[in-house]
Image 1 (cartoon, helix red, strand yellow):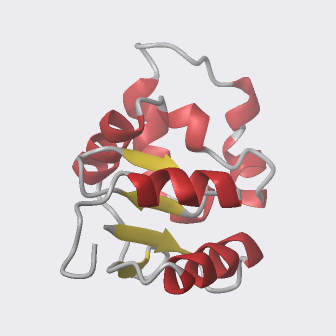
Image 2: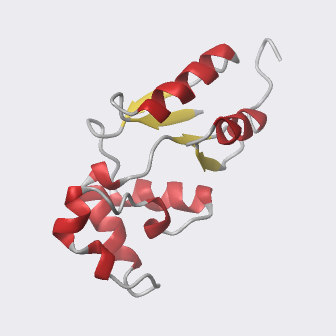
Length: 126
């Protein structure tokens, strides 16, 4: 599994702590430094079962500058949203955990992290 984090984010640090406590095997992706491209964002959205506006941090300064609050949320604007997330990764909700079974979760709560953990393949210790 991979977890997309911003190290300055307390929810990210909490999620990492829980993954460590559970002995999870995971890769950390500092997505503000290793920015996901549009195709990767589309892939994660498919895994999450969400639309780009569902994982957009609309209170960020960049969102206000772009006027995201005024953007339509429909199939016609989906690519525009994805482009904005790729160009301004600070807008991506965090942390996102991509689970071993091909799904993903926005892991902002302990329950969400546990949900991702429940989807992992049994490792050598499981």
